[in-house]
Length: 147
Image (tube, rainbow, N blue to C red; front, side):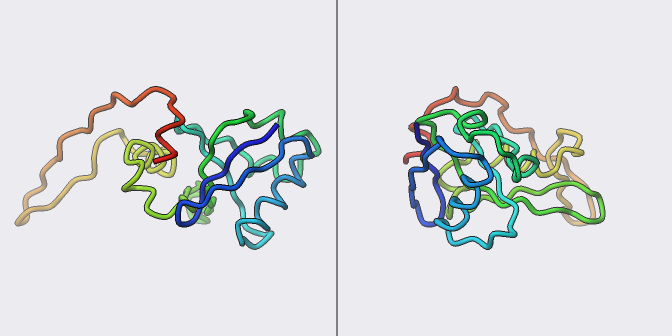
């Protein structure tokens, strides 16, 4: 039982799921060159964030949370101390260019209080609304993350 984690400059590492979640996260941070104090999470190919930051000390098996043979993108979880919210930052370089549909989902996850409307742009003192994006997203497809 394993998963593949994507990070850095298109790096892919396989990780064993047959271990406690706390050990899985420690090994993940070590292999990816992160400080053990950093808060990380994973996003699958459908754009769903797993929620590992709330389970980082769990003694449950990693296989109880992650789906075997799935591809995940490594995320850094940053806390906004003013609002108490979270911001997710992809640790896969050029993520926005290689996976634009997932980038938009990640942006929405990082700003859940947004009203669903694109940001307003100012043009010569006038405020204009930009057109909304197409909300049709591709189905769960592993090939999306292996470009």
